[in-house]
Image (tube, rainbow, N blue to C red; front, top):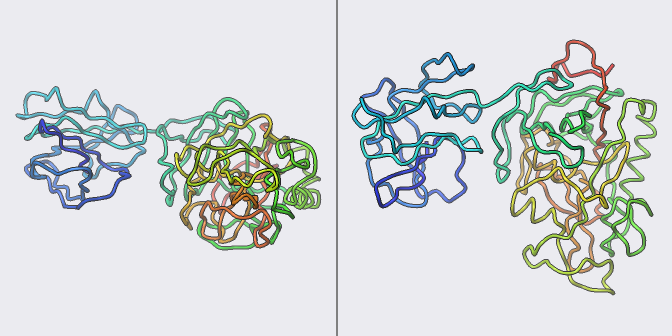
Length: 431
């Protein structure tokens, strides 16, 4: 339980559960008294001081429901997969009359909030399931009705979320954190489901000849080891999946080394399965971003034209604003049978610029994304990659100790063998 702020008018806002992205000043323990439940929890004080003793606020009782009708009493505040029922929940000053000023609700990030309390309020809280069932190619799946906090790594199985899909249209459903229901077998290999695209096709990433548990370091999930994204680095256009001379924004031209190596692997291992693999859409986002740190400037190809370094749009979007997207400029959108994961998809899955050995994309190895990072110091093309610690980092395109994890898209008409549930021991199996 976390106290967020005490206002001068002696009203306060309390956030129960969730993470507060500010420095913690101190921590104390709260114990409810004279209540149906005696609950002891840590609370953090942030952005100000507490004007009342913690025991002035009392939760008299809490209830939760799976169907919004039948409620059972609970003695622990539920997580983000439940939300406060605003019409049922209330606070009272005298155990008889409701406090009309007090507000109880769950925000879009799944944080449970009680605000505008008065000194002797006692509250009754009712929680409903904060998910809904969606029919998909895998049958009915449970989808969260709140937004993740992308400024934090996801170390637990946070379930499945929805996001507008600007590439395929409609909604995409993606797995986040230490996912346990996104294993799939296809073409003699194990894969992890990244998301269900807006058109119903399935984006999956290579996991190796066998399925691996989360947190396992293994080379088996690297299809091609020690591959430079490109063989030269002294032009900004070398971040392109394809490029032409000083023109980096092209869907044609010379292939990057990663493209050549990845398609060679595909032709040797999956070409016979091409009828089941969709012509996927892959984003090589070459938009130039807003100023980031000391990097800003004009989009150029070589040092001889300009030495001004700059960051690509993904840097500000993912490292500063934490706003991953599933949209892409048409000039950067490739139609391919095989490609790489994007940095945005890594952040959606639970990665950021911090090590994370728990989420499903961790494999203890370096591997490339398809997302450009910067034209660095006016002389080096740099790409986003996933480090061996699971961090979303950046590396020169010629780095030779980075591998390739193929990403493919299965057609929306894909059929599965009956009985699989997506777990490691019982993955979905393509017929």
